[in-house]
Image (tube, rainbow, N blue to C red; front, side, top):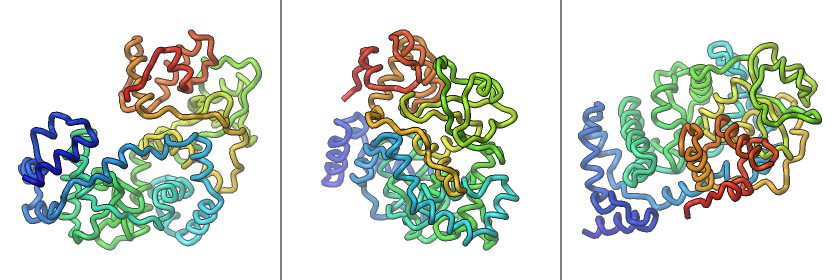
Length: 394
């Protein structure tokens, strides 16, 4: 009875008494999970070992409220992520693991600097260790139905990983949300993309650097990373530019007067998207077909820009030239979701209601900005919300 009451209070505190909290205790959640686990080939001994002593973790739910990619201005996030120390450590890792990078590049066609940048962003090249119990974290998120049924399913996949790879229970650690190892793969990503690149008989993303780098290369290749194509590049804007223009092939961008800040030519073929991550007062980028691959790794523009810029800087590239605006204040997730719902109500096609402002949504924003006489740069702001009459849910 006490355990049931504690679980109910846990849900009440964070979710305002959702219906499922009254319908199911945590022990009932575990009992209902077993038939699905059994159907996926998970042994009862594995299931019991994974959930032994597990209770809901209030810290996990608190963590869902934190958004490091959105909690600060884009420029501040990028500058903090692409620090001089991280650049230097990445360059040292490039030398230390040169032979492994040679092999990964040859097999998967993914440049080492991109692999290094992802490795550096996720765990600072393996120096930041996982500290959370993956089963407790995923069970907590599954129990409160956060992004249901995604985390409930990930919990079952994590059990299968422990069972099939014969990992000891203590090794099954993760981030607060269940991302595991130096590459921070979710359990389903481990199943889909993790490989044994070292040849020792199993894939170990916690301790085996060749497995980490090979698995990351495998991930990017399967998401169609194009070797030799940059993720994007900073551009200078010509006077009199029509900011309603967002998509063009590279030849047309050159004809319109845009120039790469680094002085290099545009790619010979393909199409790029004009992107103002902090509005037209800040840096302008043209992003390539490789940019969505970085977004697949972590659905955040600030993160993708930081990864790409870190990769560039480790190769000797220059800092971003244009100044980031001092008054840039990214919208909260609630505000972004409210904006998506408003645009959908206005008749625009909205791809999801999770709060990510994709390029289609930015084009919708441009159209609304133009109606209000605002500069149509596609950047969502509180000023636009006010003109649309949008009030985010509290």
